[in-house]
Length: 105
Image (cartoon, rainbow, N blue to C red; front, side, top):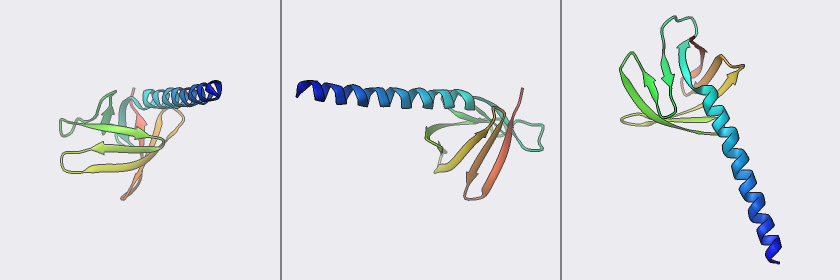
């Protein structure tokens, strides 16, 4: 019986590890400077720890869970869904619709 419990624990650990690895990989793909479609200026930069908006010189922490993005602004939490198209197009959707951003080099 003990081996069954150990096996379940190992399987649970493996699933969590794979999920964390997939999440970490996606997080790395999101890192960088992004400009709104049609703009030559940076809209925001995603770092390991924050969303940085250069126009306002402001940084906000964020969390990613699956395809959901939560940015903790000063007065509220912004909740968005997102997807990557290839490596250089980021689509963020929220209450105000869908917005495309291109990675800046």
